[in-house]
Length: 391
Image 1 (cartoon, helix red, strand yellow):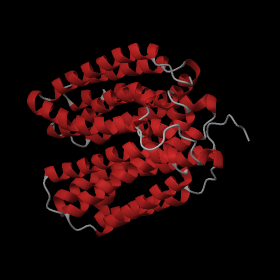
Image 2: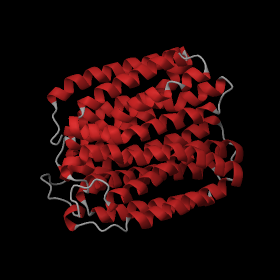
Image 3: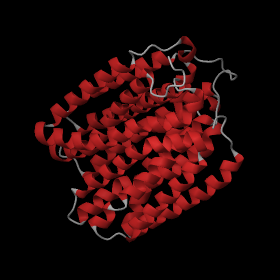
Image 4: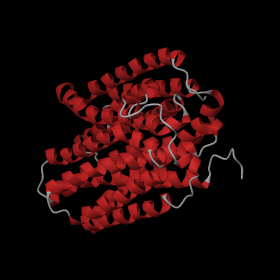
């Protein structure tokens, strides 16, 4: 067996399993608001609250996910999270009220955070030591594919077969994850926790302070991305071209998928700064272009710039966050980074919604471009001060 192989069976297994978990989220993001407003007589606010409860669940769980993953047998954590995920998806088949939807979305957020974090941490652990940066970049392909397929599957299944069939499909897929992700043997060395230097409860069991600079970078980019995620479809719909929203995100995700192998290899060969600097610049240029775009076509044309920029910078910051701590802290460092992303997307959706209602979409995008310029300046300072353990 080639010990330097990136695409090992375990890495592929965890990637596919993680991608399916992400797909369930993108399916529900697209389809659940329609179910709430058309089948359960809910309001637009109720549809938004379903997302809010999910984000609350993810944020709360991220605080404890690293502690669970690094402090207990990882095989047990993986089995527990995937089994609970399967059960919760199954319970969606019996929902008949908004209250039940809200409760299940909160629980969904918890198991989603735990499941995706443990799979990301295990994927890092099975990577060759000298290819972790490249591997983390490649691992993100699976969630990018889910980002393309999820909304399309959700809307098609709901329109063609109804919500019960949609929930049944998600239950079957998460059952597949339960079997697939737990079928890969994991050595005792990787599965069992390393001795901790802290007795009792300590903040370091939940947050990896060495990963915080890069988690903050993830917060900046997640905050900005939330504006793109939420307001591009709304703006296009207001122009009478709502169907273009699917095209925008399809182009966005396809560009990420196509560029990811090159980005991963460049990260491994040249280091993070040769990926992040151009990535942030492209992302900023895309946001500035959005700020002056006034037609559906000009909005669509910004998708390649935004996809290249986001697809380069976001996983590179994740890699830096993980590589800033010892490998036995992979669970906590991964959770620290994802916690920042969850907070930024949740808060960004609200803050930028208020800004959009006050100044309009064009100024909103200009504001997010300025936000990313600040992030670029901070990165320039921090890359000289905080050196990852592995480059």
